[in-house]
Length: 199
Ligand code: SIN
Ligand code: MN
Image (cartoon, rainbow, N blue to C red; front, side, top):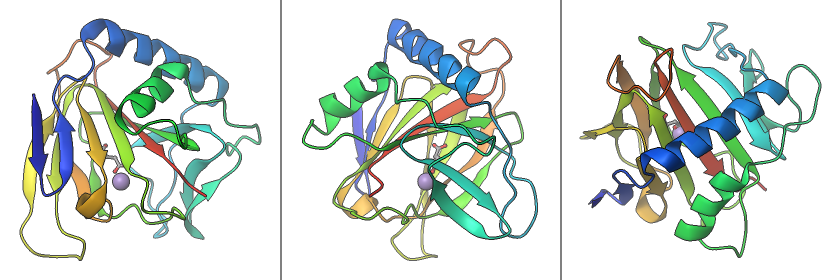
């Protein structure tokens, strides 16, 4: 099923269970090479999500602010973006340009992500592609400026969202996780993978 809400192109169950497992195995390998960490917000508070990344860039934040960085905080390179994820990008966006970053966010029960825009990339003509695995997450979609009405949708395991066009600079976030809604991750929780062209 495919739904378009405010330009957010939502593909329900884009990945069947076998493909979800294949992506999950690849993300586990990424996390072995580049372990999850919990960044501080610029306000100095620990974020509720744990993060890692693959590709030429990962995402980081601390007192100095949010930014892309070319190394894991432990000092090593980020591992390459797994083919299983590049295949999703090729399928939905094409192969004129491949993403430079696959940001991996892990939400335990109680984790959330406040409304924000993805605007630290050089070229907004490329979409951000988001892949959800594990427990359902309540995804809130807003407007290109802060405020105004929002709409929410539960993203389930295997759902993919393409944020392009009018949705590319729209505010979005995750309000809550529905614990126990998926059995994909043995310890529960939700993984969200976002593919981005950075520079
Ligand atoms: C993000 O905006 O980076 C993550 C969104 C999500 O977890 O679905
Ligand atoms: Mn985002």
